[in-house]
Length: 96
Image (cartoon, rainbow, N blue to C red; front, side):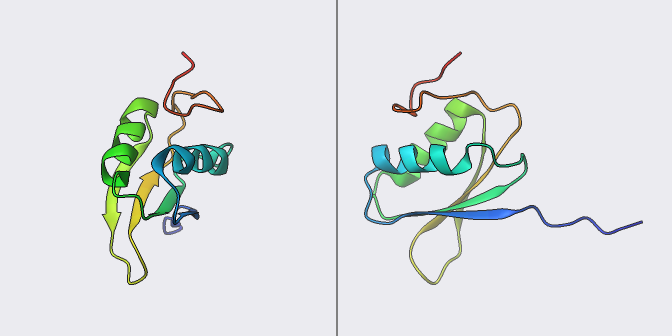
């Protein structure tokens, strides 16, 4: 039996971006990545700890929370297969 492999990890650098722009970049960067991919989001916006988990709740992606990092604030999200699609220009609005 082969040991399980670690999921793919992708980093989205949102340093200096407000959450609206960060969500636009995040949506674009994770479009088409395989389910199970862990996305590390670097965010400097003080609203990120509120907006990112709310976006995960809206879309169905799994919020993993703040991650230990020596270089800035990093949050983690696990991409899910059954995520609710969002509008391309307004990623806080779902397309149900």
